[in-house]
Length: 381
Image (cartoon, rainbow, N blue to C red; front, side):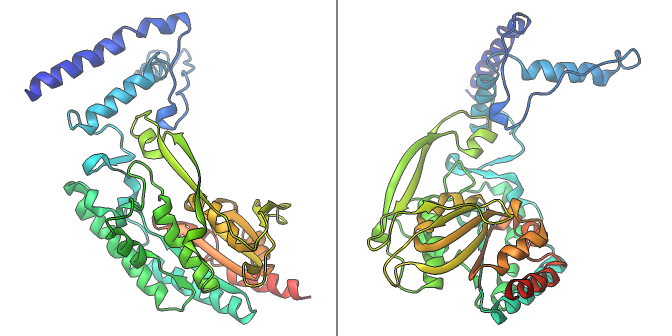
């Protein structure tokens, strides 16, 4: 039966290729949007290269990218792969159990021991510097989806997953040993996972967390900075949008699923307003006013990644003055140090997969402590 199904699928696949191929000559074209990449350019052969094999391969690849109905072909191939009828051709994605998808780089080796120790040491120095100047510091590492929802992983990836987890567990332990500036949300996420009443903590076909996962971070952050302030009853569903989630897209599927966004309606506070961007660093700057004790006072700087995008619409509602900077825009060490020196509270949030990369490029850069001291001294002049 399996051979018959495979034959039918392959026949349909080739028909879908052969029928639209001639249409390219009449200007009909496809695209590579589902694969999150640009169209392959046609090569420009010279007299010397016109007959080389790589020239023909380049023309073939460019032609294939422009095939009409390409998205349907890619989506069809994705369906075959998810059903195990063909090998997985989408190397950026791991197909898990129950139609769960995981980003393949989650299982790559990261944060070797010497790198971890170096990062922890430098972060400890920075934390002490900030504490000595009266600046609160919070660092959080967001677990990968595979770290929380490992029950959905396929058996063949478990060995690689275990190696990656050992390194992350060691990193968390080293960070926790340095001081209370490290906010470890993994235990709370693991505990929430056991609650049968709750939805998954991550979207099954996206790398990011649902509000159920994001709330763990927001609640932990707010309660760390001002205990007793967070109230889950103030959180409401803001909107639901249809979206082609990132791992669906990377696996060649154009299916659209519900993406839920939440906000917080907080009595005793004004509406959040956008302010002028902070000096130098690209940022989203918001301000609120509120009754005493209803907001985290002062200027808060958060250097974050895309996980904050699924938490920020609630998180912003708890801060009097919040400056949100993506980690990719915080890699100019001097500008970052100046922004840190001007803040009353500094928060770093980044995902497990890119934690060491982001830290070494920003706050755990070898130059950062020296530049930070200069910025702190300059700010006090």
